[in-house]
Image 1: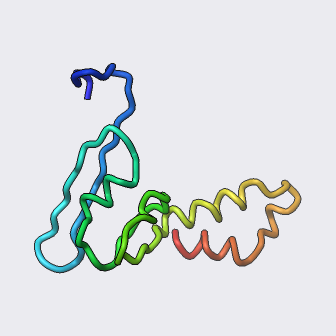
Image 2 (image 1 turned 135 degrees about the horizontal axis):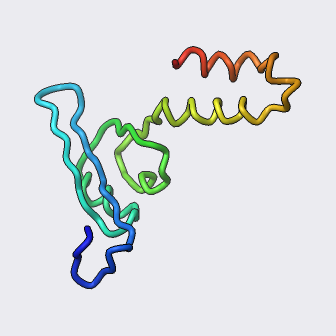
Length: 106
């Protein structure tokens, strides 16, 4: 938002994205908010019960009756970052578990 009343154009804002599940017509909704506070999904998802696929942001921890399921892309990134910081002499014999996660998910 470049011309929002009472806020400079450089102020950071957030677009919360919500999407329905597999059943029925898919709906994607973008909800503009001025902060990334956990109160926003808590209010929006009030009354929702079920699984919520998220990026691991702690703001979702406040949601009752919701089972958080993590994003595989975010999980994979951590394994990839760990492999990239290995000392050069260890990179060729990458740890099998970390390497298998990165290889499996590509």
